[in-house]
Image 1 (cartoon, rainbow, N blue to C red):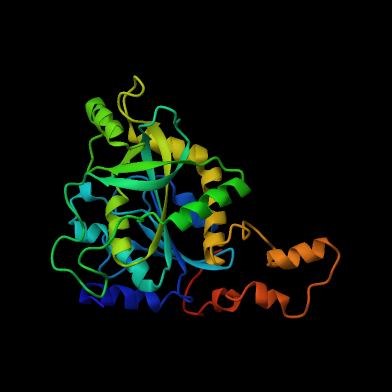
Image 2: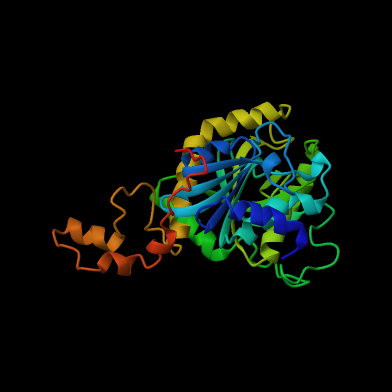
Length: 328
């Protein structure tokens, strides 16, 4: 492991009871999702060795570890932005740490401006691909072979199997989900109408100031990525009104219920072998097969629950350590 990350990962592993299966990176104003995590341990970024801190309004700057629907999870409530003056290596440090902690898959989210004229503020967009207009790349410099190859493939950066799963989950929980290409820019100034016209000609559907560097770093490590943008406003020139950050935060507050419902269901499905049948709140923790038999009036066969959920034992949270203060 890179020496830069060793202290960070050691610090977190000593405090997180169960290694995470899924990681989530929350964008501007989307931090309410973290409150859904059970038996959660909250650690401010400022207390984590080697972790950069975020100073943007709408980004809490807190790492939250626990379980969600029985799935061990780590949530980054708030991200680091390139426009804050951090080097690109620092921007992707939190994402790298998710991979080093053991996250098999990561959900990246963001607040974005709608370029597609058919979009409306409040829409949720599944990211199918991205365009990198940051003018740089987090992989520039000597390659760390422990992370991945010098020239990683980006043809399926937003994994097609996870996108298929996300669409199936969205249908099951009745959350409308658009799909499109995200273009990443440096910010912090919003784009000009001419830039938006150029981005539209390039095939972009939404624009934002994050996500792309993290996805490149995660893909480099072989971590599965699925991305969801909250369209918080229409991009410059689409509507005749100025763009404001408080408008971004207001829209995320308005859509938070749909957003939390979708992400909770998606994380549950990702933790259960990427099956859309494993959705939100299942108090009995029955497998879908066991539930179907119960509904039909038949008793589940002995041991059928274990067969239906072969990973259940591994996903069950360990008892909280007495020295760790946790929240519910």
